[in-house]
Amino acid sequence: MAEITAASVKELRERTGAGMMDCKKALAENNGEMEASVDWLRAKGLAAAAKKSGRTAAEGLVGVAVSGTRGAVVEVNSETDFVAKNEQFQEFVREVSQLALQTGGDVEALKGAAYPGGGTVEEKLTNNIATIGENQSLRRAALLEVAEGAVVSYVHNAVAPNMGKIGVLVALEGSAPAETLNALGKQLAMHIAAANPLALHADELDAELLERERAIANEKAKESGKPANIVEKMVEGAIAKFKKESALLSQLFVMDNKTPVSDVVSQAGKDAGAPVHLKAFIRFQLGEGIEKAQSDFAAEVAAASGVPQPVA
Image (cartoon, rainbow, N blue to C red; front, side, top):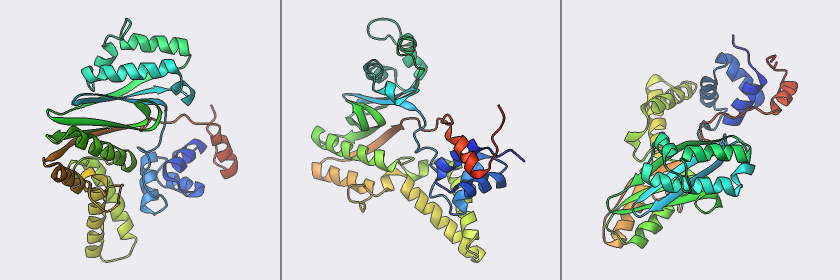
């Protein structure tokens, strides 16, 4: 059996919001495997939802840039939030966001791009690390473009113009007036920042993710003690609900919490007298998916729970 450490208990608590003893039990039941323990807690109703992608696990900034019908978003990480407030760091994010309009989502191409003032982006980043005194990395980039219409950006928790903790791009196609597209795009981007959709359409949701949700729903339904045919219907209902709540076009618009986003887009086109098509979106949240470094709080957890810590 794998050793259950205070650090693993702490991580599971942070990701699920479950109690300490429930987290210990989940890890023990699943041989210390983190993902299996998250699912176990969810199946038992001890965690509201998986929080892996929603938690900020690194510092730095997400930057956006828009030019005409093209928009780019980048994530540049730092070790501390203090560096994110540094003007030198912010200037780098600002310039790299603009360069990404040309290089697109290829991070290696972006690193090799010429940086204003001389050298490459990667060389400038290396210089920043040396002068600021903290490790930094250009983690990812993405580009959206339409032939006709608009790409609209939004930054949530902005610390400076066009950079903050969450960056969103929305691509709208159509011949509607620019003011219509920009206003709609801004509202949709704010919705995306808040609701965190996983795909544009339900049929675009990751198959592995759906299978995982199905397994969790099946475990929950079985614990109801109902007949197999009812359990099957409960599972299908849960999956249908998950798809509806996870796909942008079927989500309820956060502005009124009753109108599907697809209807909001359709109505905007009718009001403008020209069809509007929501082509795509991108949402970057700072640090999502990056494992956090463990803090000294692990020792406090160990003292309170009796969980042994591994000897270094």
